[in-house]
Image (cartoon, rainbow, N blue to C red; front, top):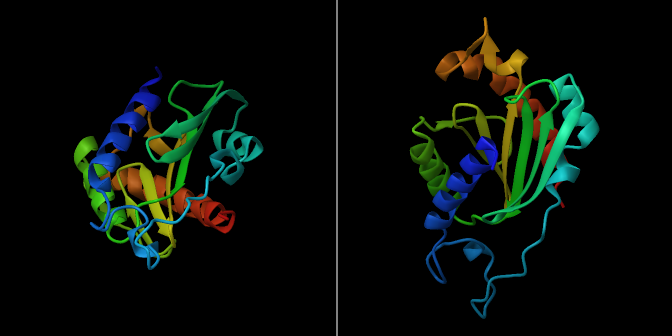
Length: 185
C-alpha cells in the first residue's frame, strides 16, 4: 500500500469516528425529511473533479499511476507522477458530513495527522488547511485536495512545513479547489 493510501485510510477512520448515527447531526442530518430518513447520497466521480490532463499540468510530468476508489465515505482519485514518489495530486469528494460534522471531521483529521487545523477564507462555504491538505465544504459536499510537487512542497531539497508550506502551496490548492467546486453535481 502506498504511504498516501495508508494516510488517507487513517484520515477516513477519523472521519467515520465523527460520523455518528441517526438523530445526532451525523452525515445527511441537516437534509433529513419529515420521516427522519436521510436522503439518497450522490456518488461523486473524484477523477472528473481533477482530470488526468490537469494533474499532469500540476505535476509537470506524466502520470505514471492513477488510483481510484472509495476511502471511507469519500470517492478518491490519486494521480502519481512518473518523476517522483512524493509528487501526486489527490482529490476526495463525498456528499457527506452534514451539519457540524465537517468541522469535527477536520479537527479529527488534524489530530490524526498531528497538525494544526487553520480556517481558510474565500473558498467554498467552509475550508480548512491541514499542513498540505485543503478540506472544503460546499453545500452538502466535502472535498479534500492534496497537491504535492517539488515546486509547492519542497525548497532546497527539504520538505516545507507549517507557514512556509502554507505560503507556497495554499494559493495553488485554493485555485484548483475553485475549479473542483464548480464541477460538483
